[in-house]
Length: 129
Length: 265
Image (cartoon, rainbow over all chains, first blue to last red; front, side, top):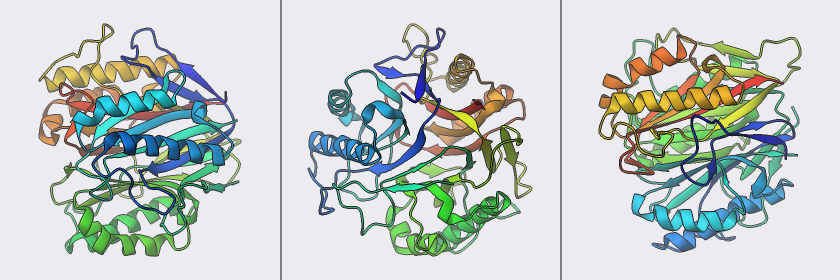
């Protein structure tokens, strides 16, 4: 790993994520906000948060792998959703992609994403060793 | 500068105006504050989305120029937009003219409100800078305008180790939410948590380089949160962005703040 996980004793994560990560080496990778588009650029899973979440995290993984890394190299992710009620399903699918704790993580409910059909977008940074 | 554009095989991103991933050697990185169509007198430029996007991009250009950089060195742009259709119709082309052939990674978010109700768009950048960090101070915080507000417009990290904090909310050590319905108490808890995390990572509040504050109500944040923030940073602010959004991970959370910091290598 090209980073250290920071675990403060006074402020523990409430959930299965890292409170902070400190980059110690490697290349810094910024990943564009990933949405549920397929190879042709079409939105997948209209109205289906689970299908969209699966596609989004697969896309995040694809970018990481194209950069020579994988999900374990993520320093931080931000998950944007348009409906808080979707969060439990998103959290479940997200966890299935990560073998251990999530990276440092932020969850934000936004008014909308780039297209009205998009229900979730995830961006992140990674240290590629 | 040793930039690599990352194109994943799937999905195909070629026809879009951004790059799925960009990796760099993190020698010198610039974080800008979120910029808007604000003018020197504090008012927002007239003329709607196109004019605001133009003004925003010109201000970002000035921040880049101060650091001897240009738009081709941008690795990330984050757009906060109150009207996505208006931006697609009137803002995107203005922005594209500044970027030319350059393709940063990008995220565009529809938010409820920006710092001033007249603001339609806010843009922040992360930029890969040229030059050797050796002999430079860890952080160069600067303004290119006399804006008089509590943030720096650009913060350069020279050869630092970057620290990415999870978004901090008003969680207490036992997992309970502090100050349900109480903005001041939540602000205090959030900044206490940020302080703990920074210390554990070997950093001080002055070493925060970028801050994003997500609030469910801007007026309440201004009334109760700003003083807590001032006391935390003691004038040594990061580049920052403040936006109002409809919600956070739990309905009890009123504010979430994420911070990027740096310590020497």
